[in-house]
Image 1 (cartoon, rainbow, N blue to C red):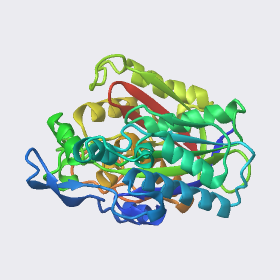
Image 2: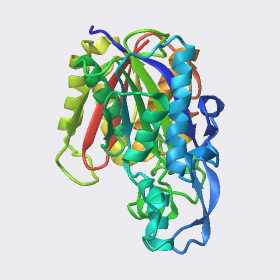
Image 3: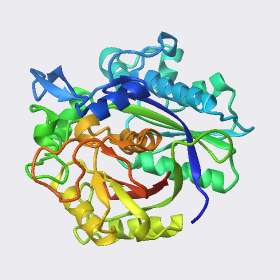
Length: 383
């Protein structure tokens, strides 16, 4: 087994509120993070269940929900890591996983302001700006880069961070994944795609690996992690992983599952572990038929009989570019606190699907994430 990379600090901004503790309390309580928000639907005339980031953050970070959430999560993770004994090296890098960035500010730029902004306001639109401001705030001088792989962006960012550390490019990495794009316009188009449902409470529609599941509720989040091989207590270790692409369809998974399965197998090889070491699958689990089928078949074929699976999307919503990062944070907190915060079952489903909060057993967790357009990713996690 190869040496692991430690997750030394955590920060989170989710539909549950600002901070890791609201996230943990919400997950453990089994209550979804969505609330009814007005102004959604074809004519903006109805309320929708959306797990949106609530107002908050630092006024000094400007008006952007995106920038406030990103920097708020990163600050919490850095403070947490330092409190746990981490002391940063000379080269601290920043990786930001993002798919749709400043959607609120860009909408304002085009529709309300007619493209007329001050130089300072225009620079807030740039994807480099929140990263640059964070690097300045903490006097970090390693590389800073955005990563984008649709819903797999969190896994992709984590594996990119590991690659940087393995190559000796950095001493430590602050990894952040941010998505606050659940605007009425974006939600409407996911509804038109037939995968997002907002008129019913999330447990009524999002039931991964259970009967009656039809899709997901939309969510927002920013989640940050400090990653290092030296100094400080770890929530968990990242042993390795893999990424692949179906090259099949812009939304659908290749029904043969060839490249998804290969991604799982290569993740095990990369981490230097065997199937018998596996205990949990923290699944992508959006509740759609094709994803349920794909992950169920792979789980049944590759995992040992005592292994179990779960998905926290019924609770946090589908947070798009930040989805796998939120779900990784759930596993990290589970290792820290001894309980897996799985959602309660609401219908008949897979016989090895966890039912509510469960004491954590020994063994490894695989975190899978299947991004729209064919992005596959799997990360291997250990105590």
